[in-house]
Length: 199
Image 1 (cartoon, rainbow, N blue to C red):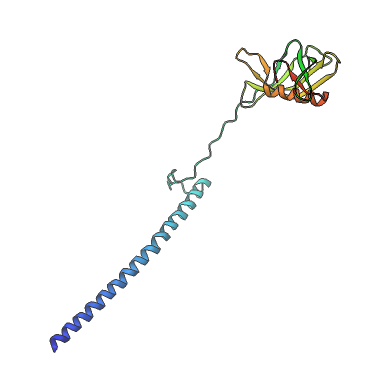
Image 2 (image 1 turned 90 degrees about the horizontal axis):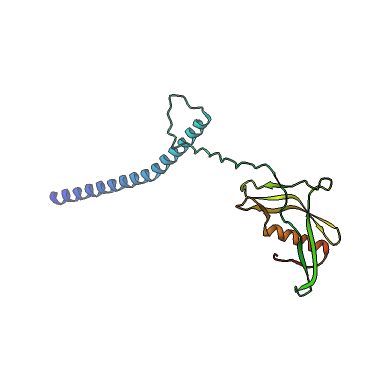
């Protein structure tokens, strides 16, 4: 009978020891799962505070903080050079011919002739002024471009007409600039027109 009681006591003690060990294991796991994220968060907050103090120069000189954790310095982007306006004698020589279109956009026998007119009436030899694009020295806009209708003498003015420089160094009006001129001429003349050899 004593032997059975010893066996029971041993079994009870072993069960209790296993339960205690199981409880300790749960507390250890719980402690790790709580402590590790809190430790990481504390480290991140500490690193952020030290980085901020380092940027403001409020850390003692003896305290060395690795630059890897410091906030990256924003690179200063160099602005492209600004190009001075240039003078151009002319863009189109001779007659500039536009054919009038009918309602079906077919070319009619009516043609309108234009010639370049300098930007200054008082000085016919004054060149055109071209503002060079900030990012591309091979393109720009004519400040003031003028055409005179050869038949009527009427003067048409256009501002900021797009131009480009060729490899030869000559400046020409771009397709976009030609479209701008044509659209404004159409609006002023109230007829549909198409440039001979162009848009």
